[in-house]
Length: 311
Ligand code: MBD
Ligand code: FE
Image: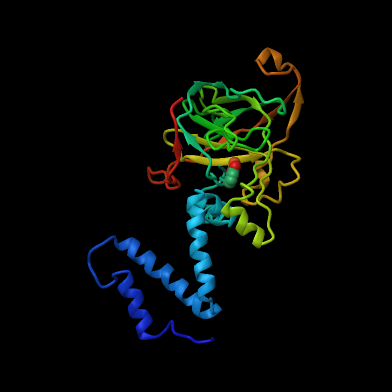
């Protein structure tokens, strides 16, 4: 059935009616977006001769995706979240902004409300026999290279099973395990005392993995640690680093890896004195460079629904 109906008056009128384009009420921006996206879908149905069976399979898939609460996970896996980063990078370049720590995607697993400590926070609240101690530390600086006092570094990462507290399907972790926040002093320093994470894998029976299977793709990430870095007078930085040596570093299902975000991991001794669970520990030094506001505004601040809890 190779018919072309998209350009007909009947279909164009239908698109306009469905989005109330001729009405003056409603959310003008949303009307514009739905008209365009629905039109692109209609056109694709024509161009690719998408069958009713395929459409209903897609509709049912969306229901399942929502039931599983995985829409944001799929957005990461399909590169949609990375695409937004590519656009923000291009906007920065066009505006002549450079020199800051590169951004990379937030992902769907942040939880707001972690207790904010001064300078140092120990965030491995739960025992994890399969994970060794890890020290993450560095300096938050501005574009001038000077340390920033009063910056807040938030950090979150997975345990040795690749699970995040609050989203752990085994229910094994307490609230805010492996999540923390530190406020810098005059030296700009931050430090997290924690455990080495393991890479995340999509829920194997979830809607996201189901689609990835059809694409012959895996749903795994290399081990990584997420950060938000905020400071008055600077733009909020959303980034992550990867754990050097992870075999998936350049095969991340969410495309978050960047060359500048793979700090060296060194072996250190003296962990016992720091309150770590063993004397030998892994150490990652990672400094953050923030960028200044653009015309007094943070033009890269992203609003999205985020989980929150009280510590
Ligand atoms: C993660 O831990 C993550 O960082 C992303 C982007 C998607 C799924 C799980
Ligand atoms: Fe993650």
